[in-house]
Length: 234
Image 1 (tube, rainbow, N blue to C red):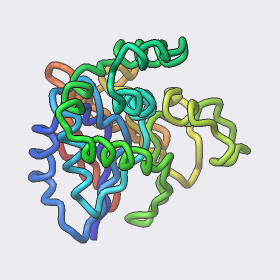
Image 2: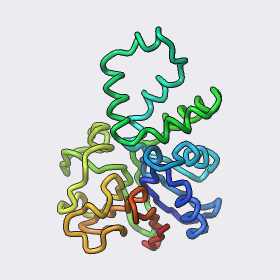
Image 3: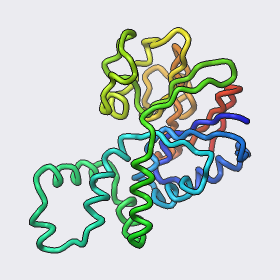
Image 4: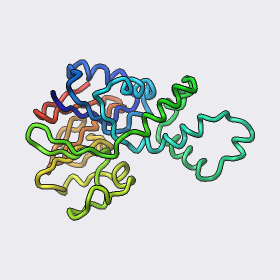
């Protein structure tokens, strides 16, 4: 029984399959996905549907799922003159922001599903966790998509807003906890200032950043085994 973590797949179904083969994931293992399964890559809905079939997977909400949910629910309805007339400014803005963040592949694949398939995908995403606290290999871990915005050592996890957990980036120069390692995605390691190995898992001050830019040219999809610290790449 081992615990693995992957983040920011972004529709790279090909890299996910390759990575799972490299890991040799067993039914007795647990795999955490730290959000951003959707958008950008060619097969985001195919990737979601694969995760839906895996009982040993725990998905955590990313900002791309948060953006997608209200938009996907809007796209469930038949697009008519009447439905377009009912579009308010807030929905238009949400659709625009999602579009700017790479929604096209998600929209195209979602549109190919029948109604039952669309509902199943939406309900699956709605069940994503916000964060997870895990003990493995004698260490404590906090798993969250983006970080802990407006961090304070006195602040309880339930006091963080959704925006602070799925949008605001980690301060890698601040060690948040003495006895807990914070595992995050959201910020590609290629963009971390001072990172000596961009595109690989970054560890610093009890931070473990595992978004290795799978949807970038030359990027990688990464996994880490929390029990051993071993890293895997596709």
